[in-house]
Image 1: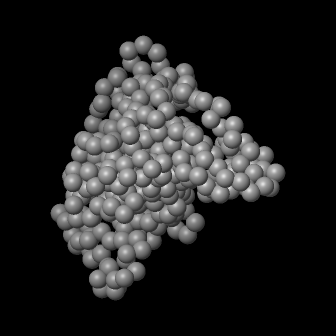
Image 2: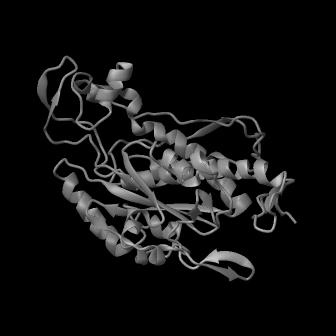
Image 3: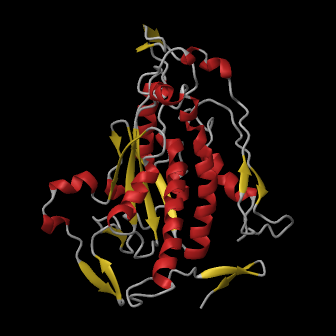
Length: 355
């Protein structure tokens, strides 16, 4: 397929620091360059070999971390990484740039070949919770989400979230948040029973993102307050296609996608690196006080949006490939299965519809 630095850069720009007062003040351009796996010249087609993308890190200030080499930041990975590896630098969220770069390729693949869209947004910042009924999962757009610095699709609630984050930021503190993610036009039949259930794969991918604290899909924990008759998604026929009238299952039943919109949420804790004085201990086991001077995100949720999308897209592409290999090379129930072969492909440098 066609692939250029511009396809990847658009996603990296959504993740980079220094975008607004909602993010770390580090000034990184996060400019990417593709070194392999894509042909040169005007065609810029993937060749089937591994794609290498490099992004230089330019605004690092090593001296900011001098004090942290002696004392552990509360609730940060400094202590546990030191216990295991003898240092904590590997726990930096800067590694998420690799996720977003590869996720950009996965999103392009999903959209162009399967018409599947992955879209995430901030649905909570501190105590400000965006009511679910204010977001139309069928029609919410990237433009609505990107219209404000907190990446909330509702303008009124975006203002409330910004105020909540600002209130913490000006005092050197931080707040947590929740990112909701949708997969629209999702193929049916993805996922496997028991250990490779689709929701479990999403959970593993999303909880691997730094600062995550929880995951839920569909009705989530709120569903525990309903009865079975209230919670069940009744089936009906929609022009010969099996659908559900409600979607409390979040597009996944028994660990396998049912063709409805997949929706999930991931919780992010308040950034542990803050500008307030905190009690801690040093590496040589002395109690002390620590005030960090590192640039930090007062709420990680806005910058986490493209990271969440990337991880969901990567899992989904993996599952589409597995589904094709398992169920379409040797069809089991073609009447119920969605066509897993991409509806369109590249031929002679142009998109061509497949029969």
